[in-house]
Image (cartoon, rainbow, N blue to C red; front, top):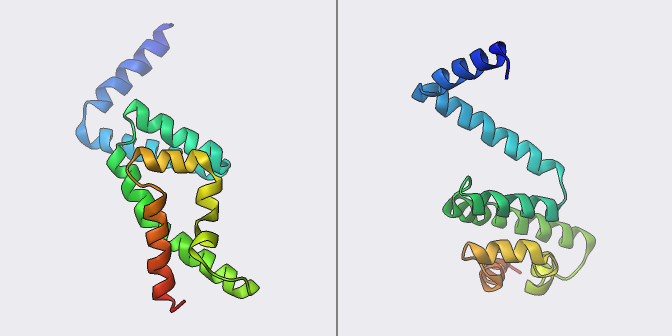
Length: 131
């Protein structure tokens, strides 16, 4: 490591000791992870989320809360898509993607959300739409 690299590392270390700078750096890091996740396939995304969860960079509770907050919207989108196409809306059709994607189901089971949680959510969303 050259003198310039040592100086840059020392400046970065000094800056990260400041709590405000540290918070900003953490927020930027989270945003870059979100951008990275949005580009990949579902299997790539779940693999990366599992990796982050296992390393401790992504708390299990945050992952669980994120899935729980996003799942109803995804169910609503699926209900809209099925009704537009004239397909029957059932618990099985709404949960088909979860059942078929074993890596996603395994990740969700790891944070305490099993298939029955998704099935109950599908029933709730169907009731909300009067189906």
